[in-house]
Amino acid sequence: MKLSTRGRYGLKAMFDLAQNYGSGPIPLKSVAERQDISEHYLEQLISSLRKAGLVQSVRGAQGGYTLTRKPSEITVADVLRVLEGPLGLVDCVLEQDAVPCSRADDCITRVVWEKIRDNMIKTMDSITLQDMCEEAERRKTKSGNYMYYI
Amino acid sequence: MKLSTRGRYGLKAMFDLAQNYGSGPIPLKSVAERQDISEHYLEQLISSLRKAGLVQSVRGAQGGYTLTRKPSEITVADVLRVLEGPLGLVDCVLEQDAVPCSRADDCITRVVWEKIRDNMIKTMDSITLQDMCEEAERRKTKSGNYMYYI
DNA sequence: CCGAATTCCTATCGTTTTAGTGGGTATTCT
DNA sequence: AGAATACCCACTAAAACGATAGGAATTCGG
Image (cartoon, rainbow over all chains, first blue to last red):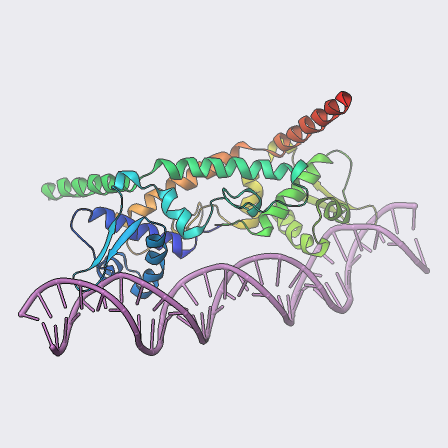
């Protein structure tokens, strides 16, 4: 029931771009270093994100990636859908292209998976990259205050 | 982000035992047939469930498995914990034995995974095998009524 | 105009996990 | 005795995972 590294790394990268939103294109190398991810592997993930329209790229020296929308307009669900595929814990209740099982009509476990999926999506939809940046800000402030006490 | 067949088949099997709760030991063969699962494979799953104390077995002819608690006292989360391991979408926020990452202190994505985990568990904790049996009952009744209209 | 920085692309690969199957032994009921 | 059942350990084919390899194309700065 684990997320793959695609989703984990991808969200980290998107969060990084959100934190640097407004500073022009961010080279992937710096994202990879800050987030401690293999740059080459991250390339593949960001490629998916670009094709999905969540980021845009500038090629050549001084190039890099930027979010195509404001951090407040990109949710965790948006990112995970691109990198992990349609959301849902089992194939028969995916948001998109669900693969129905033979006994879909009277399958009770299916009802369970649907409930879990809906709750999961609700949570993922409710968190934006902006929220994550604000949380990071709060923490920075906290530890900043802490410094004054030393 | 998919559940493995362990969790899927296991919940089906537990639901089957719940529907037959009170009818003495249910042979695995019949569960496997009704739920359309390889009996030999299901053996391995039920073995985990037995060791975890969710079912008990009676050996020999006319033997089989029964739930150790009432269906109302077994939740979906109970079953999935046994078959899928500690709940959580990423290793660093598992309920049990979480594997902290290097930057656990200021990892913001971690906060996101925690929220998702908590919501998922809340949902899974709220659904019992009893609930599933009642849902099945409702459907049976419905299709029964439907027959009268033809 | 050159060279460094960067995105972009396709292929390959070792490891781990998954979803079983095989081939039995032990126990209990009829 | 014989059938039905639980129980156990090993094995395996296929898929998924998490990269790595090796470059081509583009763009900026000096």
